[in-house]
Length: 372
Image (cartoon, rainbow, N blue to C red; front, side, top):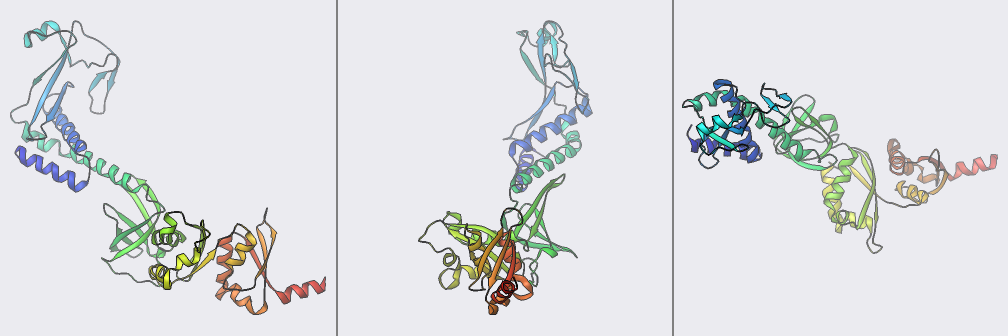
């Protein structure tokens, strides 16, 4: 491989792997230096320089001129090379002034001098010897680059391509890596096709030896939260605040919102003109129903709003300090609405408000009062 081909190959690696040019060249120089030491002697005072324009490389031996040999604490690296910490001049690099003058007539103590020692057949030896070293360095750099790109993506919404599946998981192409979307984390009842685009919530990012392990979900309540924050600009500019989400994926979600501007209707803004804004969210949720709940700092009012579509609900806070317990009194004909099908409405209201809600009808309350 000539110099131009060498540069072209490295440029391809840099673009393909998305890693720093400096990292690649440093890895190559380290690999070539290791190759020289292995095949031509273990001197520690050598390095390999690569010309980044021509692709040519040369082996350089360097010396520090001394009037007497200096000793320090020996440090042996993983490759067996010896260096000295005090002073930081290794034994191989020291050259007495008398010997130095034989090479460089104007040599002076304390100065560093270099000479090229590139063997004639070094290119052939280096190509085979340094490959493993360079490959490892590039893998490490690529892994670190991917980790840096994805480690702050936890709890975020991403768009990927469904690339593969097995019995338990879908594998989503997120760009430079793939995330794992367990089939148990899909919205119940939804169907997907390989090669199609898909929105996913990043539930967890774990950094392992081989890079980031990214666990995805469409079932987690955070998926609904991020959909609203992404689709509705007022959440991004602070006009609206999303306080909480309670969800039974594929069935119903309750989303608590409020406005920081008294002139802006929080629920109306989320719905949009003729339902245009909420429609895109519902489509992504595969028809899952969404109840928009107006948040209130008054827990009784918040619980009352959360129990919608039940109407004319009277809420009394029993204990807010220890048990977070509340009593909701509803008209007799509103009891089914308060509970919802299979109790889903009251379950979601309890999760949303973080209160244990006891529901009684007006008739039940009157009867208990008469008994007392």
